[in-house]
Image: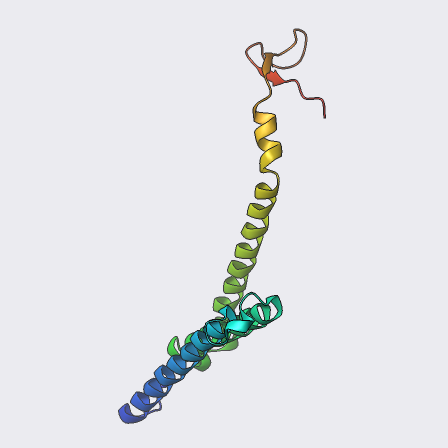
Amino acid sequence: MSNLSYEESKKRVRYGLVLLAVVTGIEVLISLFGKGYMISSLQGNIIVLATCGLLIAVLSLYKAYFIVYEFMHMKYEVKGLAMSVVLPMLLLVWAVIAFFQEGNAWKSRRDEIQRRNALPATPAKQGSLLPPHTYQMDWKG
């Protein structure tokens, strides 16, 4: 952007803000449509809801791409610097997906965890390799 004049830079910023506002407005309309507020007969339709969710995700990724490449000036940097910003962001997305998966696994095993926590603990057997003040649960699979 260093080769643009002040007026050209202002036009680019206005263009970016208008583009982001339009995409956000489209996301809101898609969300209202998908939840059934615009057409009540579509409320609860899983196919419409999944399609709208996918469209919102794609539009959000486009907005993130546009912000990083235009407002953070990655479009004007060398490829190595741009990748040093984009690749850690992908790792963050992977981490969020992994945390959701792990949380879902804990949620699905909640009853098992509570059942095992209710088991009585007994002192460790003499002659075992455990220290004398260690307690063990009597668990029978």
